[in-house]
Image (cartoon, rainbow over all chains, first blue to last red; front, side, top):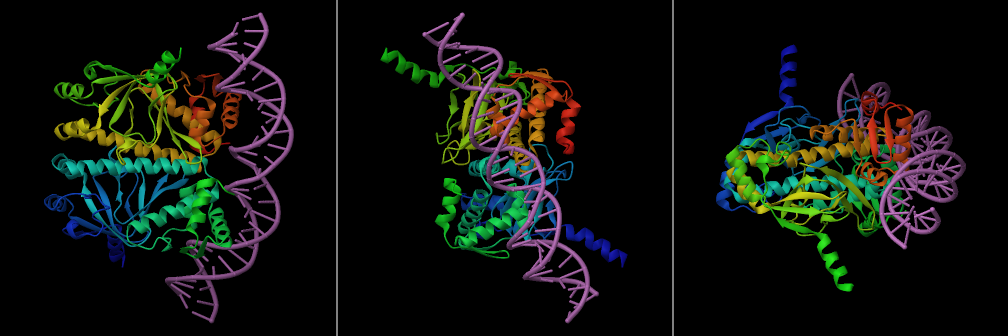
Length: 251
Length: 251
DNA sequence: CTTTCAGTTTGATCCACATCAAAACACAAA
DNA sequence: TTTGTGTTTTGATGTGGATCAAACTGAAAG
């Protein structure tokens, strides 16, 4: 009994499958790393991206401190990134969905700066960083797009700094819902109805609020006819109203 | 009288000087973009970095919305980066000192995301982005280092998210002082005595606090024998005490 | 010199959100 | 079915930092 248990523990951490990536037929192509490349270039990319890794809900794709050697494209599923502070306090620094790139924080110091935790069963394409470097020397479009992705991550984070630094609770939560809505829409999902993959506590951690405050804001928005919430299901009923909350500093 | 006034307004915005950069003899070399390159490689870099631009105190290096075409290395002086929100609220998102790179936020969308404002008379080396792209295809070390710089900016910002999201006022301010101290030390300045280039309000904006709170924390730290503050001059008297404040959640 | 002004300090008061507490709920395991 | 566990909601109370207000400082301008 001890042996299978041990084996399970080792295996559930990561399930590797040698799979040829099929960027050319992937419907996330235009959101993902190879956005805007030609068909020949896509072939080269595919040769680089050859490992599809499955991460089950609750498991980590990587952890802070681990050696960095690859970035990951989310193929399906949903992740949170979490930084843990020396004294145990932690903060969610981002949520990642299909087509988004994870792990760029590790390039600077050669080791990851945060944990990436799957919030549902997920699959990622693994992109070895040294190959990415080589290839982006050959393919201008790849280099440029990779730079753009890193730069957008910088801009995204300064947007979060704005949330945390100057907005009040309800503004932050409206902004959060609108951001999710917009990203889901870009992936062909309904921007008005969706399931939250994270808990109230994780939302709160991301927004610098306590879970009770998140819950109260949801209730308030419901009362005001802006949204319907039932557990993790959200329906936006008045998107303009939500936008006004976070655009006009309305109370 | 009207004419000189107009001319002054136009000129004070930016003073361009065609100067050969001298990365090879620059004492910021190891902190800056060309860190770790060979002498031959440095020659190539120098050919790329050929404009030294002076920005006077209070002027902007670039503004949000302007077309992005270059990143900048701070040669001397001090900058703040500032994001202004639609309704006029703004936040300082970072401070940059000699050897640091500014403007990487513009790559993603082709236009700058924030204003870069000089807090004292400053000089920057201008690095045209298309040249940087080309050259980093040829020089592996340059590509790698540029990626590291972008990645470190991502990590820096997630550190600020941590400040804003989970730390209390005095912790934020201790962390801020220690960060300044460490960066000045890396540049050969005293880590224990320095001049703040920014106002209490700018510190507060960066840390998500009001200027009064910053002032009170300084006073408290002074009372506790941790620092001496006189206007913009700071002397750290008990660096371990400061570290404990932000490492242990002490009140 | 005086005046002006931006920046800073300090005190008094307020309030948005945290904290504490308890109940309701969902869902899985026994 | 019960039991347990994690999540969410809601209410009551507390508090850290914001806000309001006033005085002070130093530097620059007249």
